[in-house]
Length: 99
Image 1: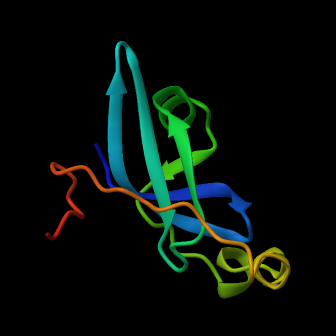
Image 2: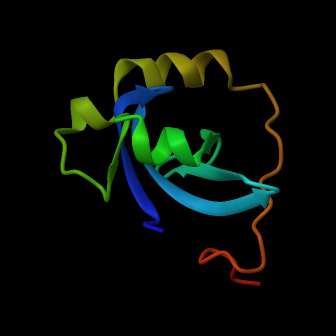
Protein backbone atom coordinates (compact mmCIF):
# COMPACT_ATOMS: atom_id res chain seq x y z
CA UNK A 1 0.00 0.00 0.00
CA UNK A 2 1.28 3.46 -0.90
CA UNK A 3 2.21 5.48 2.21
CA UNK A 4 2.05 8.99 0.74
CA UNK A 5 -1.27 10.54 -0.35
CA UNK A 6 -2.70 13.86 -1.52
CA UNK A 7 -6.29 14.72 -0.73
CA UNK A 8 -8.26 16.26 -3.60
CA UNK A 9 -9.89 18.60 -1.09
CA UNK A 10 -8.37 20.20 1.97
CA UNK A 11 -8.71 18.58 5.37
CA UNK A 12 -8.51 21.31 7.99
CA UNK A 13 -6.67 23.33 5.36
CA UNK A 14 -4.01 20.74 4.42
CA UNK A 15 -3.76 18.20 1.60
CA UNK A 16 -0.61 16.04 2.01
CA UNK A 17 -0.89 13.00 4.28
CA UNK A 18 1.03 9.90 5.29
CA UNK A 19 -0.56 6.53 5.96
CA UNK A 20 0.97 5.54 9.32
CA UNK A 21 -1.24 2.63 10.42
CA UNK A 22 -3.38 -0.03 8.81
CA UNK A 23 -5.83 -1.82 11.07
CA UNK A 24 -7.78 -4.92 10.07
CA UNK A 25 -10.86 -5.94 12.02
CA UNK A 26 -12.68 -8.91 10.51
CA UNK A 27 -13.18 -7.82 6.88
CA UNK A 28 -12.81 -4.06 7.47
CA UNK A 29 -9.56 -2.21 6.79
CA UNK A 30 -9.05 1.18 8.43
CA UNK A 31 -6.16 3.54 7.74
CA UNK A 32 -4.76 6.24 10.04
CA UNK A 33 -3.64 9.20 7.95
CA UNK A 34 -1.55 12.02 9.46
CA UNK A 35 -0.78 15.38 7.88
CA UNK A 36 2.80 15.76 6.72
CA UNK A 37 2.92 19.33 8.06
CA UNK A 38 0.98 19.03 11.31
CA UNK A 39 0.62 15.78 13.26
CA UNK A 40 -2.37 17.26 15.12
CA UNK A 41 -4.33 16.89 11.90
CA UNK A 42 -5.13 13.25 11.31
CA UNK A 43 -8.04 11.11 10.26
CA UNK A 44 -9.16 7.53 10.00
CA UNK A 45 -10.44 6.38 6.66
CA UNK A 46 -11.60 3.14 5.12
CA UNK A 47 -10.08 1.25 2.23
CA UNK A 48 -13.08 2.17 0.06
CA UNK A 49 -12.70 5.89 0.83
CA UNK A 50 -8.95 5.91 0.20
CA UNK A 51 -8.84 3.76 -2.93
CA UNK A 52 -12.21 4.05 -4.65
CA UNK A 53 -13.80 7.38 -3.71
CA UNK A 54 -11.81 9.65 -6.01
CA UNK A 55 -11.00 11.87 -3.00
CA UNK A 56 -7.34 10.80 -2.80
CA UNK A 57 -4.38 10.58 -5.17
CA UNK A 58 -1.43 8.26 -4.57
CA UNK A 59 1.79 10.10 -3.77
CA UNK A 60 2.38 13.74 -2.99
CA UNK A 61 1.21 15.97 -5.81
CA UNK A 62 3.23 19.15 -6.34
CA UNK A 63 0.86 21.99 -5.52
CA UNK A 64 1.31 25.74 -5.14
CA UNK A 65 1.59 26.68 -1.46
CA UNK A 66 -1.82 28.39 -1.41
CA UNK A 67 -3.44 25.14 -2.59
CA UNK A 68 -1.60 22.84 -0.17
CA UNK A 69 -1.84 25.10 2.92
CA UNK A 70 -5.01 27.17 2.84
CA UNK A 71 -6.57 29.88 4.98
CA UNK A 72 -8.73 27.12 6.46
CA UNK A 73 -5.59 25.76 8.19
CA UNK A 74 -4.88 29.09 9.91
CA UNK A 75 -8.49 29.31 11.04
CA UNK A 76 -8.40 25.73 12.33
CA UNK A 77 -5.20 26.36 14.31
CA UNK A 78 -6.49 29.58 15.85
CA UNK A 79 -9.71 27.88 17.02
CA UNK A 80 -8.10 24.62 18.19
CA UNK A 81 -4.89 25.85 19.83
CA UNK A 82 -5.92 24.89 23.39
CA UNK A 83 -7.84 21.77 22.48
CA UNK A 84 -6.06 18.53 23.43
CA UNK A 85 -5.68 15.81 20.80
CA UNK A 86 -5.88 12.08 21.13
CA UNK A 87 -2.63 10.16 21.11
CA UNK A 88 -1.59 8.48 17.90
CA UNK A 89 -0.43 4.90 18.28
CA UNK A 90 1.77 3.32 15.63
CA UNK A 91 1.52 -0.42 14.96
CA UNK A 92 4.73 -2.43 15.31
CA UNK A 93 4.66 -3.27 11.61
CA UNK A 94 4.18 0.37 10.53
CA UNK A 95 6.86 1.90 8.32
CA UNK A 96 6.88 4.81 10.80
CA UNK A 97 7.52 2.75 13.94
CA UNK A 98 11.07 3.72 14.93
CA UNK A 99 11.15 2.38 18.45
